Image (cartoon, rainbow over all chains, first blue to last red; front, side, top):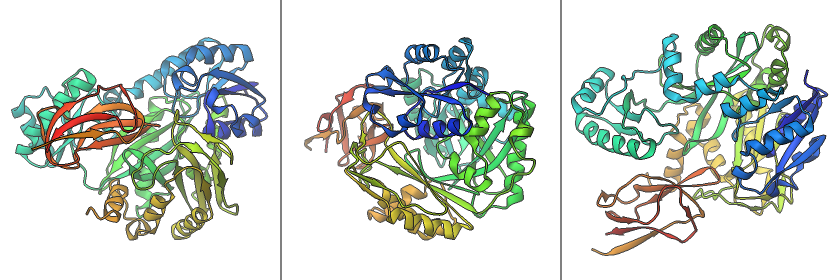
Length: 452
Length: 73
């Protein structure tokens, strides 16, 4: 086990990891920028170090400073949290080169999964479903029309070099495809320097289903079931839950087993989440693999009873999967997480400011993860997440109702927040019936504002 | 036809410019996407018309109230 671990992050995830380290009796080192000096997560660490001015570039993304602190503190492990340098292979390598251990997958895996098209190719060559798609195309219209005929309309034109949803254009017929091709290629050249594109079948009302993986240093891999993260707004997840509603358990387990089997064959390492899109039938189309702890990991912890952060740390320290995880992992009840963001609930602009009041209800099945306390300042330098409210109950309806009650009892003043949007979703017939899809969040907003 | 200025409603950065001068664009379609606190904030066409000028470049910092584009409606 590690002697001392440095947490190279801030706020809620730093608090989460520091708690896990404390429970493992490992000494901890926290870091903070000028903007974060009064935040409560720092009180959970044994030692704290100043990074620099508030901007991420000068603080949480500053590899030089972080490595210097690592050396000065004598820590033998570094946990990167999520975001910032968590998926930066260079940083992971530099940490490992000092003799300390980067708590996460090897730099090789971070790099392999970081290139979306390479990751897809690797997964496809190992038999995982990608959803109908074409080869890399040059932009020749005839070639594109032929590929679209084969895949079947509607199709999505995507830049091969891209990521994050930028530059994708939908086409429902050959005429639209010609226009979409032109737009996508020019945007792709401007944004990514390459006009290479490929086509994918555009899924109607898909669901975002992701599978949690844990692995030891010997390449043994297991999954801890799935999470449904379909409720999103502009590519940001807002509500996540586990298990995925309304889908047969054997089908979900098989998808998880298939992914874990491929990752085991490839000797994956430490932690990861395989994100997929599901649009009916039995196919889970692979999107990407995140080689880090995810924001929404808590919903999996609630239904399985397994502390994923502790497991990740123990696995990184060299413990085998067979002793870290129980032989049988069962699903107990239902868990839902709501992300409370500091944003205007109507226009969705970020709303930084002082948290004059921040109070959450307490009780059985209510879990709050936050990096702030009343009096903290939410600055514009980082993401706008105020807190995650995670509810666990014996079934989904109870969980939804409990979450609504908990949100009603949450008191946040000083900044605007998205609780009205969360309520809009949780009150909706569609969400309550489990008829969710990645467009539902946006649809509900449009319906509510009268635009539909 | 009249010139109309499109302003940013947040302080942030220009993330992606998704339209080009000369294009005819419908009301509420995206001209560019700003980024603030890791969130995507679209800048939309206020009315249907032609995009005349884009006054910022990807990566530029913008302030609340700053004119970022000019359209002809």
